[in-house]
Image (cartoon, rainbow, N blue to C red):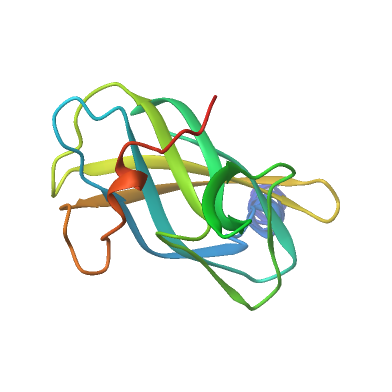
Length: 164
């Protein structure tokens, strides 16, 4: 009886382990731009690489009242920022950069300042081809304004004239 019980428990454990979701998306170099006094928005940036075709469909953070995926694009010779609808495609095996001046995460209605060195929790929600969703918790480190890899035009700091 003991052997049957042990074998059953091992089988159940192996089954649960095999069904546990594996991280379909790898996140590298997640960071957030530090803010200045009274600033109510900032950006989060990172590199995403999916093992299979998937989409980034939602982003959340307890630091912000509103979190949206945005893109910067030229419209009639003017660079404009706009929310991305329908999510961001992540082709299998291809690194997708969320960076200043391109796709990025906007953290708006900030609940407090973001100082260089702060660790900001960000939740990424991905959706695969079958509609299955996967949530990934990321810790993004705040980098100071003026950081060469995180510098952006002054207009981006106040979020331009983008309306929410």
